[in-house]
Length: 342
Figure 1 (tube, rainbow, N blue to C red):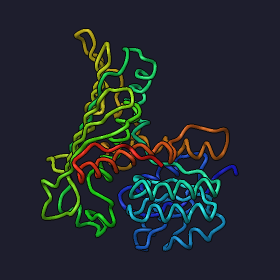
Figure 2: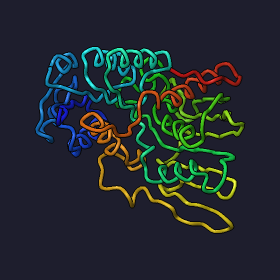
Figure 3: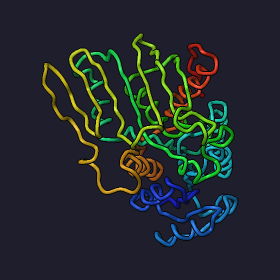
């Protein structure tokens, strides 16, 4: 197929980001928007001049639809992905790919059985700073990686959790801070740091005790296969949404990802290596989400339309899902937990 008809499922905060990305991809065509709230679907569809769907069944029954973007509440991700695969649709799946590792395994099996492709949204891997850091680490430009730490301090309010009845509940969100906001940080600690074998961590609710039943704060120690350790802290209880902070300790220097910039400190001097915001074009969504959605989605469709292109898959999401499951288990059991993959 020369151009792939895509439908965005869900018109919440992230749906418009996907719509804009599809619109700007030469390999895809924004065929439609789907939401059970017809006014939301109609408003977004009118902006892009595409079709309106008000049920997922309608989308799957339309043979002209080649792919679906699942941008719905967490508890719907696995079921919708399995249904899409059974109907032969290509899939773009927002994080988290499922509520937990066992659910993700079901999705992975369904995708493999159907022979369709699934792009897992791990867009921060394509931030210019992360690409630069990954290259320096892989090429051992400054020696071996000795340690890594990551911090995420964002703000989520009672109004945020009250804006949708699925938020802040174990049954429908699958957790809180870890599975929703910090899952990308967990992915980067694996993507840059290497294979994580186990974690020991703790979750707590410190700022929103009267609002949510899930965690708003988490910390963990990562135990890597090669013997090094990583350190992680995240909260939704800060006073603003700060950019990610990552520090990567190498034999001959330190890389710091701070304020959307990558800085190298070596031999007592600091050097700016990359700047996400300077490198990014105007985008839909929030700056601290990163700018990689458009590139990742385009790479997925370029891969479907022609020669294979690199994009993040369900297998790429396996470690971040395994890590967050292990942190939850570690907090419950007060012990180190091994990473289970799918």
